[in-house]
Length: 314
Length: 97
Image (cartoon, rainbow over all chains, first blue to last red; front, side, top):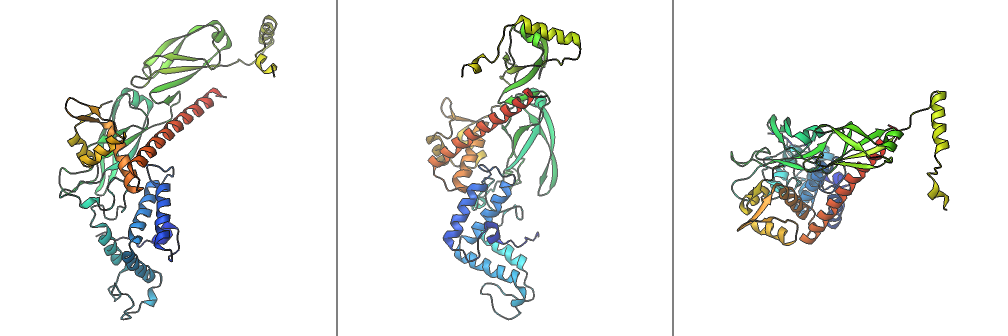
């Protein structure tokens, strides 16, 4: 049997042990909104939410709170509780007394005998307090994980061997990545969650897709964008350039008189039915010789051009 | 993407909700299943949305209208955030790189 460490629920909620029931409720509601995994930006939101939920479940009920307070008092000042001192109303503080086991009993009386004992009380994973006892066949809890994949994998699809930690050790599962999957999508792996009460009642595993940073492309939903550096003369005269796409190289026609920031579209070259966009970035070559300087000076003479004409109208 | 279709019964099993709860989500426009020939059909994507709605309702003690609003705002927030990240990255690539 796994023992449960004693937790100071007042510290978890950040309140005084003398707080009123109303204060406890108010604080919990505020923290629940702050740390709810579906709402929160905090990196450890899930864990925090479970902690405050557990704290509230224990403290919200006056009787359970009284039991808890007594235990807490004992944990903080064990010497005051001499044998035979009959101090506690609920517990028999004799030589066999263990705060941990009493604490565990208290939790059990509130949360029931969860299969995930020691693996976190409180809701958050779809199985909120009380849910576990619904029906005869208790389904295991659903699990959620992030899965970081490359853009290439998202484009072409593929499979990944994923090692996940379960209460009974790590297991490796094979995850099929559907071609064209976009960032933020959730893959559902049936029966790969926590085990339930019978063979067929395991929970599911949800994998949320994230993309690793790509050295060339940025994604926006199912569209991808490539920033393509071009020379001033390529942009001015127009040309055809071989550009990378996730499906291999293609030729892209750059129209004459293109500007920096011009956006060209390669239809159907994104993820799934998405497109690839090519954003032109005009790059000036550095002047490193007299000849090159003369070339720029010749441009200067031949163009009567003021790119700041609109600024001058102020 | 594989767009598995679920009947109401299958959907209830997967989401651990009862038909009444699912109906309520539909009534509030939170879930929009595909009207099949003689019954609703649910897609994979409905599952996460439905579970998220149920978590918000239960954990934050929201009513259905509150859940619907929270979901819409969260999703809008997420889209905006993704868009900002995308534009920031592009801006960086257009700079001195």
